[in-house]
Amino acid sequence: MADPEAVAKAFTDHYYNTFDTARANLASLYQEQSMLTFEGQKFQGMQAILSKLTSLSFQQCKHHVVSLDAQPSVSGGILIFVTGQLLPEGESNPLKFSQTFHLAPVGGSFVITNGQRQATKRLSTLATDAAGQLDVLGHDGDALGVDGAQVGVLKQAHQVGLGGLLQRQHGAGLEAQVGLEVLGNLTDQALEGQLADQQLRALLVLANLTQGDGSRPVAMGLLDAASGGG
Image 1: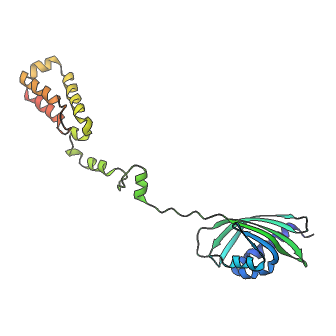
Image 2 (image 1 turned 30 degrees about the vertical axis):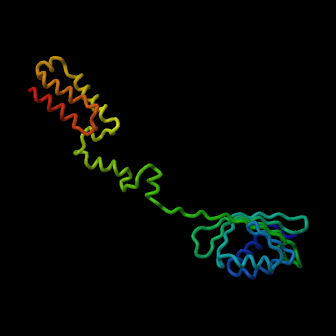
Image 3 (image 1 turned 180 degrees about the vertical axis):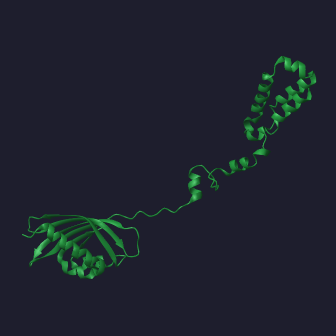
């Protein structure tokens, strides 16, 4: 009996070279009893099998065999299992495929009695959408990679007071805390020596901004009130 590995190598070389360049010439390798399962569909007989193979969306292609295994069968034939890559003409991304053949000896040669072929789908390239990617990350698509509102604040930082940086719903209370904290740090001696009673009352009123809209220049008000006593 012929060496199964040598037969399998010679057969697959011939089969894929013919498939790639002149697919219709594969007819001589099939008989009317032959059966092929192609991507889950069954075809029986030479005409049905050739009709399927020649009606594929590509005519020219290139097969590259990655692995090849062969076993002798009980009937004197050879069972072949192939994995590889298929690159259709005009494509840049190959398909991975696997294929099995059962060869039966006929008149000193071999024909395909049974076969199965399966290919995995190519992974499509995802379209690049910079704005969509930034949106997923929580940004608004600004070219600097951060929220455009934040960029605007940074660009005009010299124009923004303390109240403008605080959120409106919490700004008034926080400003009052800032003013009271400053008062708490002033010693009794400093208050007695530098601030008159009217200035102190004005400063307390300024610090109690619980009804404000979060936009008054608190820090500047404190400085003006303190400098007025000197």
